[in-house]
Length: 80
Figure 1 (cartoon, rainbow, N blue to C red):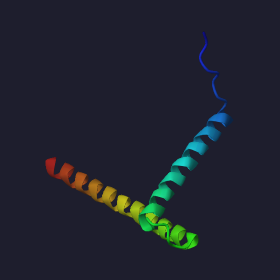
Figure 2 (cartoon, one colour):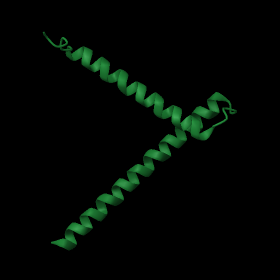
Figure 3 (cartoon, rainbow, N blue to C red):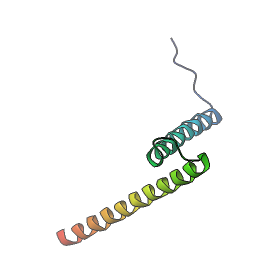
Figure 4 (tube, rainbow, N blue to C red):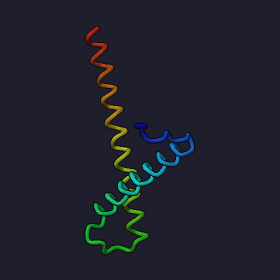
């Protein structure tokens, strides 16, 4: 028996794009639930607040990553 037929490069790109889109939609829905758990805000306002929350989240991740990198470099310098 043969396995599934391999995907063409175009099919792979389309599949990966769909996965990324679904993941991004799920993440944005999470932020929308965080900023408006009762769904009482105007949809445009909810979307704007969710985008602001998403941006703040990723900025915080970036700061944490930068701090961890700086700490790691400092530790390496002290160890040598």
